[in-house]
Image (cartoon, rainbow, N blue to C red; front, side, top):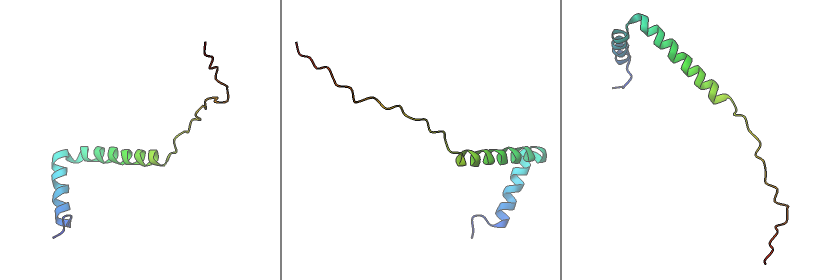
Length: 66
């Protein structure tokens, strides 16, 4: 017996419809779709790479012992 059989999905959809109601279900679906779209867009965007300043290691050290 499959976990996601069509009858199970139908019962789940009916329960969700009862909980949220038909008007809220459209709002929830739209918000979920927008969130998924924004997440995919953020995953595909390359982050800006900032150059790391390098320390100038070529200066001689003054090691004077007194």
